Image 1 (tube, rainbow, N blue to C red):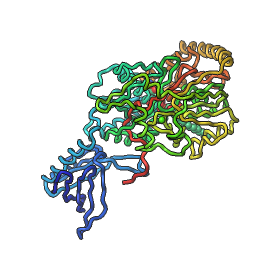
Image 2: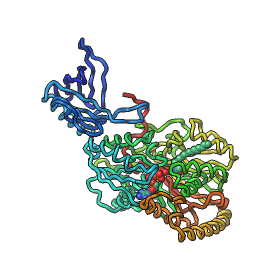
Image 3: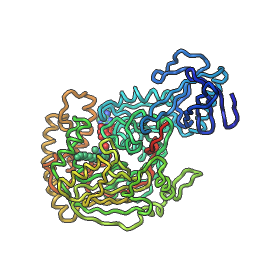
Image 4: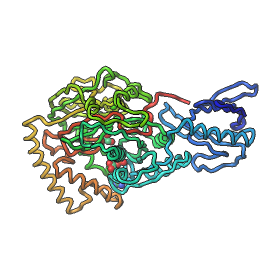
Amino acid sequence: MEIDSVRVESSVWIGNKRYKALLSGWYFSWTEIDKRNRERKTISVPVSEVIGVKEGRVEIQTQKKVEDTDLDFTLFYVKRNGHGLSWSLGRTQFCCPSRGVRDQWTTQLRTALKTHSPSRPHRLLVFINPFGGKKRGKQIFHSLVAPLFELAGISSHVVVTERANQARDYILKKDLTGFNGVICVGGDGMFSELLHGVIGRTQQEAGVSEHDPTVMLQPCDLHIGVIPAGSTDCVCFATMGINDPVTSTLHIIIGDSQPLDVCSVHYQNTLVRYSVSMVGYGFYGDVLAESERHRWMGPLRYDYSGFMVYLCNRSYPGLVQYLPADSHISSPRDKTRCLSGCRVCSESKERLFPHFDSSSSLYSTNVSQCNSELEGEWVTIEGRFKCVSLTCMSSSCPRSPEGLSPSAHLADGTADLIMVRETNPLGFLTFLHRHTTKQDQFDLPFVEVHRVKAVRFSLPPGEAEEEEEEYEKQADREIQTSAERELEDPEKLFCGNIAGQSQQHLAGWKERGSETSRLKRQGFACVPCCTKPRSVSVWNCDGEILPHTEISCRVHGQLVRLFARGIETSTMQ
Ligand SMILES: Nc1ncnc2c1ncn2[C@@H]1O[C@H](COP(=O)(O)OP(=O)(O)OP(=O)(O)O)[C@@H](O)[C@H]1O
Ligand SMILES: CCCCCCCCCCCCC/C=C/[C@@H](O)[C@H](CO)NC(C)=O
Ligand SMILES: [Ca+2]
């Protein structure tokens, strides 16, 4: 075996073929050597994508050794499948000329791993929503995720949630010392809990008020990982290009880090929620409100509700004001895509954090800095809209592989504002259908899209008061009926069909049910689709209904970090 400061090299055998194994700089490679000593095919693995090195011949799932000698070692690494977005665990068993060489290889590879992959997590806090999506969260974690964490030497503390907001509250209140990241096994709703926990905790510790819409929020160090097990899995899909639990797990293990823009939604001077995916009024708000009444349908509830709401053919009056982003940097119609290593996003860092002190890793939060991102001229648009949506990223998901705004960036400090004006049902169907194809959904006369830093939405004066009164009355009628139903049978209030569901499940959804009742008391959520008054919809904020209509939104560039790397272009091994 030859070892110098930059190279380690030796002969090894894989099966009955001889190879030259080489560890040089950032890569470990093995090249087949034929009988005439000529070099054949090389397989090369970046050290940063090595998952583990084990003595002996080790199986993937059981991690048990099969018959081996003390000449063997097994390398586990990231393997790309198909077009490269789906990752699986690659495994190669090497046989060395002597035990000494084998020990040298395992030591050298482990040292290289520590040097070239310093940001890998060692300890993770995992939250599993047992009721998200198709209710397979626990099974997904125990059969697919836990064995990989164990192989990579990552320890985890697992919390199976028993109620909504448990994960958020845990992150806000408990001692998180020693954890390098928080992971959710669930859908976008679970991700949102972690997002609120992590942002809230970071601001508490930094003494920053989340309610002040002009303040610069402190960026969060604690990484968030998403193991998809929900209905839409938009955050996972838009940051990885796929929703696959094994791919997500491998990104977490190797400590990938993807910054993400976050939009804060305020009502007057109070923070309402954060969003990374979609803040949508009109169609998307109505679909969510309708779908909450059909939760028992599982992921299909969105398709059913989408169809019902489409048939209602609603449009809503609104006054939209927005602060445009610099159009020289990028535009929502420039036909580019935000991919792994995106130049627009990496160049945004300096603009977003001009006062970043790299020696202390601290961000200044002085007022002049916060206001500079809010400088510029606001533009006002009034009209009737089928929908108004704001998205910080493409919001691609399996239903819409290109997303709400295919050219939006994950971490450029901007969001795309999409306004679809009142149109005929066929026109709107064309718009919706284009979300499912590669056709440009913005190339329609009733659609406009702008890249923005902030948005305000209000109801047009006069009309608003009248309509809100009518809405209040309608909501009151609805609440009364709900309250009567609640007294008769509390479970039926929220779930509709509860036959065959576990008590634990019901307890969980009851909390969401009472949250919905609270919203109803304020006159907003879950009013049956076609009995609603004409002119007020609700806001869908990453899958949650907001309790206010007149809101203001501001984008906070690169506020959180995910264990992800953005969507890779095709890179087959
Ligand atoms: N044990 C629980 N009981 C009831 N609700 C829960 C529980 N744990 C988490 N939740 C809530 O359930 C909501 C939905 O969960 P999740 O996002 O995992 O699945 P989903 O709704 O199927 O997926 P998506 O959000 O992608 O549509 C979350 O907003 C979360 O707050
Ligand atoms: C004629 C075919 C019509 C198909 C219409 C498809 C339109 C799909 C658009 C999908 C946008 C998804 C935006 C993501 C929203 C998420 O934040 C949220 C939380 O998971 N999901 C939903 C459904 O509100
Ligand atoms: Ca963005």
